Image (tube, rainbow, N blue to C red):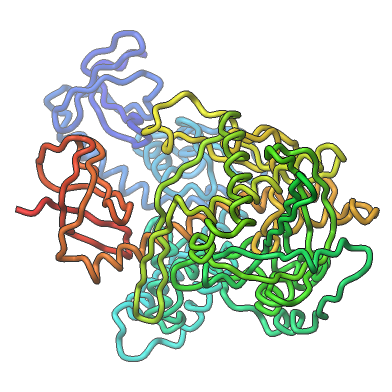
Length: 636
């Protein structure tokens, strides 16, 4: 049928519109709408065909048609129409449905039915211009969904009003807000799939939802203002439950057993930061003729904590100790982490020892791994060790061995980044910043000895088929040093030994920090089982689960530590350096700079021409520690 000169209703982006067909070219219709705009549509978009008319009559007739259709549409009872079909299945067009409901098939009736069923899609599913009646089960399910949606929207409105009251600190907090605050707190802490989380994400966006939750809890009096906000937003509870504290208190002290190698008289010493309390490694060095024996002794936490017990389960959940400027959140209670397992001076402690034998030229000629007992005789800070290293024969020998180990790794492709780091500590209302010397000999010694121990442990595990968690790193691309830091591949965890290119080792594991890293404790238990002749406690499948958890936790904890450190660095600059000139190095011609003394990157405002590598003075223009934002300007 030719449609030229007819008024039609057609689908335009799923909306039914009225048009007048000026010309038809096969399946293409050239139309005008009631406002005189030209349109071209495909013939299969036509739903209703009205009577012929002249183009001049069209605007008035279009209004009349719309009025008649609206009147007929108001008569349509969609549910009644659906019920009248009974169990009838199959698609039906508007003409059939209009005949069934109105007992007539006028264009206005067809349009009315089409529009009514399109707007109320509870009972029918539309496919083009056809309608498929839904089953009773489908209708019931959709009704339930819509009811839940209505309840959700009502709940959302109530929550928004309550949150507005809390944030404005109106007089008194509504009783219902207590429940809301509980739900927000639980959502943060337990990462529940609570609707409250969805609402917060809608309000603030997914990236800012947890920060918004923190602000709400703070205003609602649910957060200790002195507690690091990044712990709260990550849902990390810094304190241990009474049950865990009691379990730690019940742990017995350690006494030497004959099955362990006795190093109690080996003049063991530790080197750590002055405020370190979780001391998990110690060193010994002795000469046997022309040979040197270096002992790297790691706290044996597995001697105190059994797989699956209360303390172990909590350590697995926490995954790692978290070090923030304002607080340290330990993996174990202090009774264990800073006392029983910590390698303190003057008390025997169980250890996992890697003893390495070197010839007089410093070449490694052998090693053994054993369970041991040590007794630390001296504790040194890094500063103290650096001050005596030139006159202390043990430290001198260790430094020389460390240099040879490092040089050998460098020849195998190892990369060492030696740039100063900042140590930020918040004590009460004061923020303290100290620089860590990247050229500290004692830090270099400790680093190389831990790399040595972990590398040999990995070799030992691979040789003896002990299933452990390895850390691998793919080879880097050939790069200029300036680009190296940005593109260096991140190491990853694996159950298969493999190259760690950044360390220049064929295999590497981490077993040197079992007080502070759960994955290290797991690895230590595997070695302990092998050394004592019992089956390893973790099979491959269980290790895979631990590996996945460790990787996710490692990334999350790194993010928390980075955000917290950045916050307190910006807070320090805001409090103490807001009006001072700050030396900076220009990174590029786009205005990106790095503060020389604080290693903080930012951008300089204004259209200034800067040369990469140039040293300039800048001042803080704007700074917002909470948002992690800072912008600089060049003083006039």
